[in-house]
Length: 89
Image 1 (cartoon, helix red, strand yellow):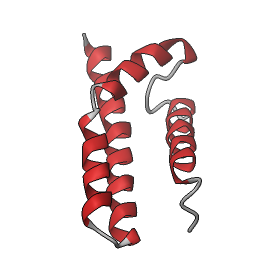
Image 2: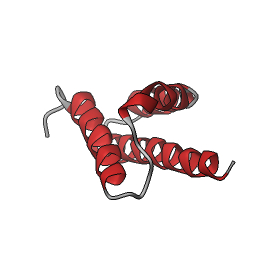
Image 3: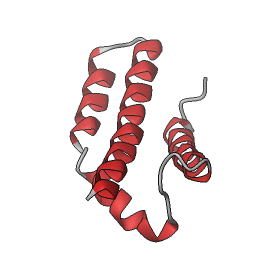
Image 4: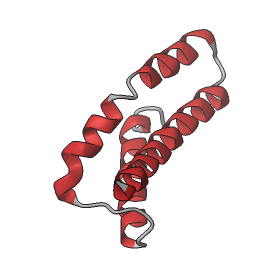
């Protein structure tokens, strides 16, 4: 697995996942709401500490990739959940 494109690849997967969920009607996603989504992601800045810490203490790329995937999944779920809560109020 190439490490050079891991961040960019993960970012593209995240954007594609959000876009797909929006197209399927599972979440309300609009390009005009992008600022709101970015603010929600910034609230999750401690995830960066988790990823950096994992990279510092382990040599296993499998562990690193698993932690990164779980963190990205957490961000997607958080955005989707927050969007659903806002729709109720």
